[in-house]
Length: 96
Image 1 (cartoon, helix red, strand yellow):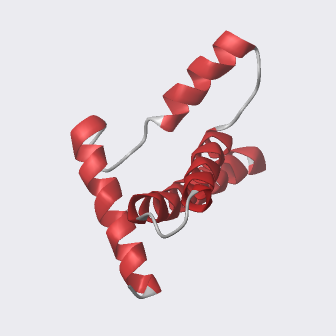
Image 2 (cartoon, one colour):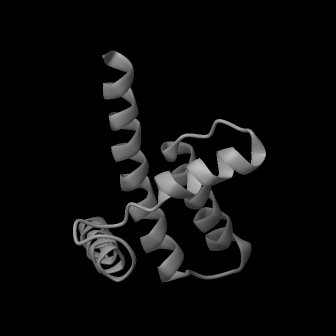
Image 3 (spheres, rainbow, N blue to C red):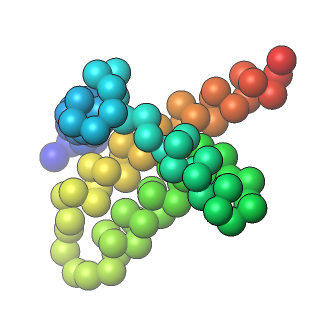
């Protein structure tokens, strides 16, 4: 599959999951997850940190066994986009 097709599929997946679990505009549960994690652990992870952890998880799964795992590849791309969005938001908040 060509790279642009992976990007399109990742966008479709984010939209589908957003409708199933969050909001029509897409997957946005990481902020709540990270906030809960920080309360329980006393840490200070950001939303972007949370997306990075999931992206790493998908990469680890991709390389853990021979062959190719489509779900891991598609999710990793989606998490990269969500991470970029969160980092941009963080930078905008820090610039104020």
